[in-house]
Amino acid sequence: MEQTKRGSFTGSLGFILATAGSAIGLGNLWRFPYLAAKDGGGLFILIYVILILTFGYTLMTAEIAIGRKTGVGPLQAYAKIDKRFGFLGWIATIVPVIIFPYYCVIGGWIVEYGFTYISGGANTIYEGGAGNFFSAFISNPITSVICFLVFMGFATVIVLLGVEKGIEKASKIMMPILFLLIIGIAIYSLTLSHTDENGVTRTAWEGLKIYLIPNFEGLTLSKFFSILLDATGQMFYSLSVAMGIMITYGSYTKKEDDLSSSINRIELFDTGVALLAGMIVIPTVFVFQGTEGLASSGPSLMFVSLPTVFEQMGIWGHVVGALFFLLVFFAALTSAISLMEAVTASIIDRFQVKRPIATAVCFGFSIVLGVIVCFGYSLLYCEIPLPNGTVGQLLDVLDYATNSLLLPIVALLTCVMVGWVCKPSCVLDEIRIGHKSATLHREKLFVVMIKFVAPMLLLIILLQAFNLFSFM
Image (tube, helix red, strand yellow):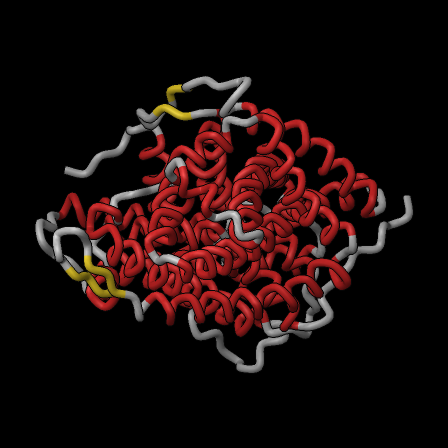
C-alpha cells in the first residue's frame, strides 16, 4: 500500500506556537485560577512552577521525542519504539477520541457567551442572574447542540486544511492575538477597585497579593501534600501530555529543529499564560465579590461568577466580557484543534487514508458523542456516582475517565517504557539531534524524573482517583 504523505511544520516557530496552543487551553484560564485561590496563592504557584520545570518537562520531552523519532502518530509510535507497548498507542489514541467531543461541548458554551457579549446582548445574561442564564442554556437541547457544532466546525475546518496551511497558519494568527488579549486584560484588571454596599473598598492589588504571596496560615503536612497533588494534576492537565498530542506534533517536526530549545519556550508560554490568567481572574473576582467569590470552581467560575463581576463593572464590563470570552475562545480552539489532529493523524497513519476521510470519520463520531453529552444536561439528564466519591453528569463521567484514569495510566506506562525498558537514551539521543550544544541542560534531571519521581507521583494520582490514597 502506498504511504500516505504526512504534513510537517515549516519550522520551529510553527511547532512552538502550535504545541503551546495545545497546552494553553481551558486548564490555564479556568482551572488554574481556582486552584491557586484555593491552595494558598503563591505557595501553589511555586509548587506548580517547580513541577512544570521537572515533571512536565520530562513527560513533554519524552512524548515529543517519541513522535519525531518514529515519524508517526500515537497509535503506531509506541509499537515502533517497543512492540510490547503497542497497546499503549491504542489507549493514548482513545483519550483524545473521548476528550475532543466533550471539550467541544464546553467550547459551545464559550461560543454562546462570546456571541452574547460581542453582539451587545450581555443584559440577557444579567436580567435573570448569570446562574439562571447558564442553567437555561445548557439545559436547552437545541441551542447547546448548535453552539457545540459551531465550535467543532471551526476546529474541523482548520484540521481539514492540514498541518502547514491549517494548524500552523492558524496558530501563527491566533496565538499572538491570544497573548495580546491576555496581557491587555491582565493590565486592565489590576486597575480595578470597588466599594460595596457596606462601604468596604477592595482593590485589585489586594487580590494580587492573595494570588502571589504564599499563605502558610493553617498549613499542615497533609494540606501541603494536598496542594502538591492539586498542582501535579493541574500541570498534567495543562500541558496536554498523555493524549497523543505531543507525539503527533513531534512527528511533524523536522530533524534539524532544536527540540530542547523549543520545549523550553513551550514551558514558558504555557506557564506565562496560566499566571496571567490568574492575574485576571483572582484580583477581578476579589474586587467585586471578596474572598467568598474566590471559592467558585468549575463552570460556576467562568460562566457565573465572572459574568456577575462584568455586570458590576457597568459599560466597561460589556467590553471586558467580550474580550475575555474571545480570549477563552482562541485558547479553547487551539487545544481542540490539537485533540482532533491527534485522532486524525492516527487514522491516517493506521489506515493510509487521505486527510479529508480521516477528518470526516473523527467529525462524525464526535458529533454523536458530543450531542449525547449536550443532552446529558437535558433529555438524558442523570446523576452518576463516580469512584472518587463525587456525583456528575455524562460530561463529568467522561472527564473523570480520561483525566483521572486514562491519562495517568498512559503517562505512567510511558515512564516505564522510556525509563526502564528502552532506557532514557532512546529519548535523549533524539533530543540531541539538532541541539546546538554538546550537552543537554536537564539530562540528569530527565533520567531521575522518568525513572523514579514521575512514576511515583502518577501512581499516587491513580490511587487518589479511587479514594485509595490518603496522607495522614
